[in-house]
Image 1 (cartoon, rainbow, N blue to C red):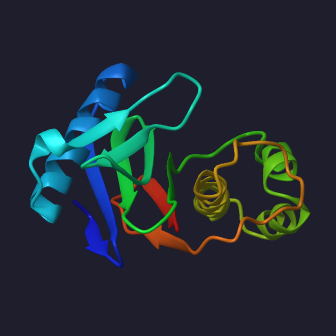
Image 2 (tube, one colour):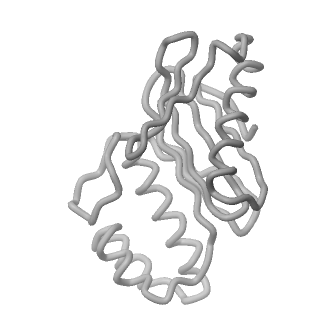
Image 3 (tube, rainbow, N blue to C red):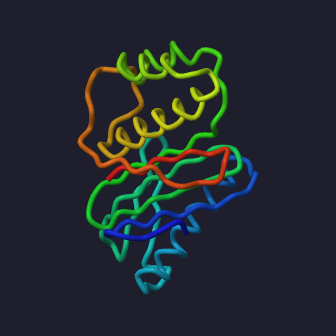
Amino acid sequence: MLFSRDGVLVISIGAVLPRADARLRIRAAVREALAQWLKLDIEAISVESTPGQAPRLLLAGRPAGLSLTHDEGISLAAVHLHGPVGLDVMRVQAIADWCNLARDYLGPQVTQELASLPDAQRPLALAQAWTAREAALKCAGLPLAEWDGAAPACRPQALSLAAPYVATLAY
C-alpha cells in the first residue's frame, strides 16, 4: 500500500509477471487491502471485468472508483470511495520519437516545454506529462486519444515511486 487519505487508497505490487498474472494479482491485492482498510469481509468486495471496459469495483454491492495500471515489474491500483479515480504508471526511458508522441497525445504546450529541456531531463518530464494526461483521462472515463485540447477536471497528484517508475493519481 502506498497511502490512504481523502477516501483514496493506492496499492502497489512489484513483480515481473506476465500481464495476465499481474492483472489477477493486483485485483487480489485490491480486495485484500480494502478488506483490511474498511474492515469488510473479503467476500463483500468484488472486481468485475468486461473486455474493452474499465474494471468495476463493488463494495458490499455498492460501486466505488477503481483504476488499475501496469508496466513491466509493477502494478498499481487506486480506489476512491467518493468518486472517480484515474491512475497511470510509466517506466522512465528515452523514446526516440518523443516529439511526435507528445504532439499527438499531449498537445502543443507540453511538446514545447519538453523541447526546451536538455536531452537528459526529457525522459522523466515526458513520463510525468504522459502519466498525468492518462490518469486524468481515466478519471474522466475517457479513452486515450490524440490531443483534442480538452483537459478533464481532475486533481492530478504525482506519486513517489522508486526509479525507474513515475506515476500520477487523478481524482
